[in-house]
Length: 143
Image (cartoon, rainbow, N blue to C red; front, side):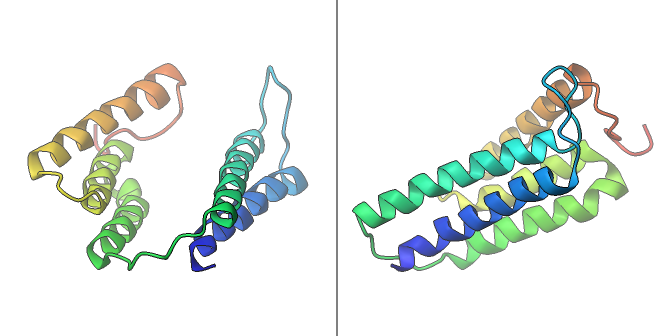
């Protein structure tokens, strides 16, 4: 039963985001999506994936693994660092920092690979969100 806690938390969070988007944000249309379309889509997708996890957990119960404190710290540091660092330095350096910090949760990844991954994800964010979609983010503060 302990192995169901994570998927159940994700299910509640996904449903919360989806319902919050429907209740309080304009969804727009397929041609012109409103501010609620993305939270609805992501929340719904998270809820579906979490429901699959709950069903799998009920079919094949697993014993819960002990949490790795380094991995937990890395993920928390990555998310917190992104939230704090984005307004200070811009979205690209914050993305690089967040990916580098959260990659500590993956065992056996070398420092050089973490740097390459951070750079690659930052470039992908730049290409997708800033160049492709034209999102009004500050890429690098001061530039």
